[in-house]
Amino acid sequence: MTMTYAWLWTLLAFVLTWMIFHLIKMKKAATEDVEAEAEERSDGATDVIIVGAGVAGASLAYALAKDGRRVHVIERDLKEPQRFMGELMQAGGRFMLAQLGLEDCLEEIDAQEAKSLAIYKDGKHATLPFPDDKKFPHEPVGRLLRNGRLVQRLRQKTASLSNVQLEEGTVKSLIEEKGVVKGVTYKNSAGEETTAFAPLTVVCDGCYSNLRRSLVDNNTVTEVPADSIPSIANGELSTFLKKSMAPQIPETGNLREIFLKGIEEGLPEIKSTATKSMSARLCDKRGVIVLGDAFNMRHPIIASGMMVALSDICILRNLLRPLPNLSNTKRVSDIVNSFYIIRKPMSATVNTLASIFSQVLVATTDEAREGMRQGCFNYLARGDFKTAGLMTILGGMNPHPLTLVLHLVAITLTSMGHLLSPFPSPRRFWHSLRLFVWALQMLGAHLVDEGFKEMLIPTNAARYRRTYIATTTV
Ligand SMILES: Cc1cc2nc3c(=O)[nH]c(=O)nc-3n(C[C@H](O)[C@H](O)[C@H](O)COP(=O)(O)OP(=O)(O)OC[C@H]3O[C@@H](n4cnc5c(N)ncnc54)[C@H](O)[C@@H]3O)c2cc1C
Image (cartoon, rainbow, N blue to C red; front, top):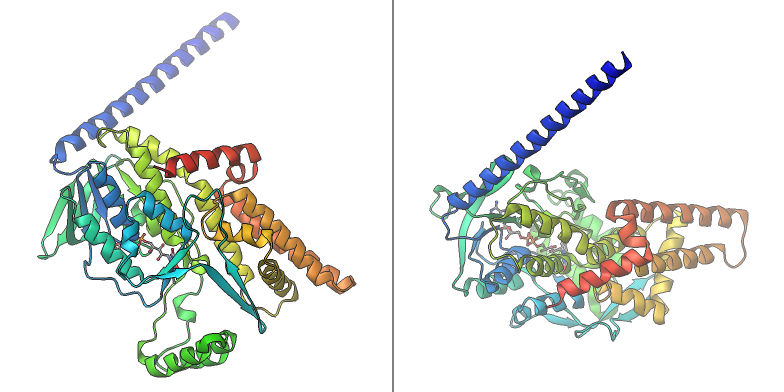
């Protein structure tokens, strides 16, 4: 009897293994068919379709075209984008532009040098220069600019390459078969619905991306929901800006006066913009990559979105370079998996710092939080090697998650010391304990999101950093 059971079980195990083996084989064959078909369907005239020509799309198109790829960029609106706020290209972002051969696009757009940042609090202020870091192989100076002007320069330079087709059109959807993206449907400038095929489609359609939803979890967080913004029409916004914002603006260089004048003169033109955050998620579909704001966003408080997008493009360009063509979707998909890890030193550092500063630097009546805010100001204002270290991180000159975590721990301890001084009392002790728990919660959430082992285990962090530097440098 026992022997019969043993035989039956062995037979069952054999049949199951055989079935699983054949199912895997059939799935593989189906994928290969789709890949081969994609290769056929691609008219052979295009290697990559890029959706959107903002900083990410235009820079990526240039980089891939310089490597000999035939690139078709489809951009909804080829006029200069009109954003009402200025933006800072960090020193680290300038370095990435130089790596991509695009640094000259910062010229002739009235970009201003930014050698330092200024911080103000309760009538005190400090100037924080971007330090000269021997390990950073570029000038430690950022550029203040208008995003639209930079984008227009990037588009012009990209379109000047003979293997780039920059077309005005609105992409409506991705053409997808059996989990493989083969191209896009779009409305061209004549209003006709048409299609384009290529072995690889890169979605760079920005923070309001429509295409992202069909590719990855949409985990966007908006800081201030649209319905809680004071109304412009009935004057609430104007009152808010005058009463709540203006007193926080330093009077140095007539800044506050200019701000108030702007409100009076430009009231009908006042606009608001959403500040969104979204962690990066890997897309499991083949034949497609998501980049730029459509892929990963952080709070703009540390002005780094363009820099992260450019860093991602450097990595991806260098990883894709050895591939003779992009139709092997399996290889491209493996590259995207490596890209997702290699980008961590920059993305995890910047995302964590942005998230923490966006919570800590907000004015508050909570004693513990105000203690952290003051501690942060004190830490930045001290002007010693610690400040310099944090500034190299902020400027993107030292993408190093572990160093950032050490700075954040030091800031927390400084803030607790500030709360406990001049001598500890039960109330002060309670607030400093609350501060500690809050700091842990903020950091903990990011360690989980960005990857504990990539950020905190020193040997791993060092290895990831070396790979990152090797992959972003030409
Ligand atoms: C308030 C604020 C301040 C910021 N300040 C800074 C700063 O100081 N420094 C910094 O580095 N970053 C800053 N950023 C972030 C930075 O602007 C972005 O990270 C960066 O511009 C993203 O570039 P992108 O190319 O991914 O997206 P976008 O610049 O948004 O480009 C997307 C492009 O896709 C096109 N498009 C969209 N949908 C379609 C479609 N269906 N078909 C075809 N084309 C389409 C759009 O027309 C657009 O041209 C700030 C962001 C905000 C919100």
